[in-house]
Length: 285
Ligand SMILES: [Zn+2]
Image 1 (spheres, protein in one colour):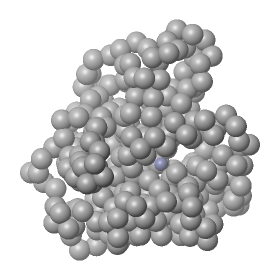
Image 2 (cartoon, helix red, strand yellow):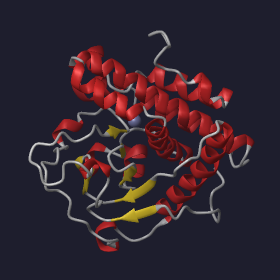
Image 3 (spheres, protein in one colour):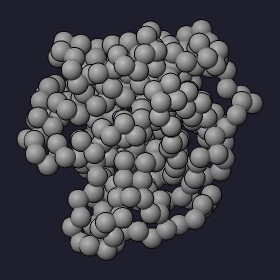
Image 4 (cartoon, protein in one colour):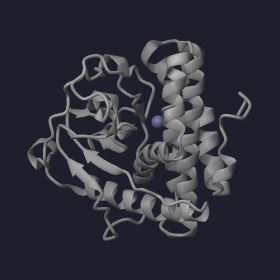
């Protein structure tokens, strides 16, 4: 992907805590509020590293470069990708007669406190609907290459575009529906719904990639293959096989390798937001 020297988004911040956010608007200081779901990039056991915030978690911290590491090319790259999502989703929303409110990308290292609870770098990048921010420790990009076998800059761009896809879902009202469903469904039922939500985020990442090509003209040879390889490497079936030694479909939360590739590709080939109804699609897709 051609990115060096291109516009970087200014909708970014850094630090170990992200102050405020609508998750706290009604419950600040009250013990036992239910934090909103966090949407992680992969389904690898986030429960071990995720602690829900109990009430008083709202200390605000200003930008603190010391806790988030020095500026580097990985952050520059992330800001360029974010800027492209702003341009592309801005246009697609305007085509739908809506206005796009950009997300904020929050850089952190090790751990971070959010409106959705606390999370560690180990669980990977995620989106928090409670404050509408994308959280990322850019060292994940190295893990993507070394641990997940998904190298290449467009694999990294796919991660960001997937998280921004969750923001798009939030703007379209889906996270609120998911939170409601979470309280009414069994775990297995909710997991099925989660898979559909995640596959739609993959589809939106594919739609974004479509416009990286047709509107921005910044794709290079091999970029789409890098994203598809990443989608393959992080499929629930593949990760479970790798980390647990067995595959339990009832616990899938993000979809199989085949599903993740299918939906990214469909978004990329069509560039048509209206074709991303993963909730209506048959289980075979
Ligand atoms: Zn996700």
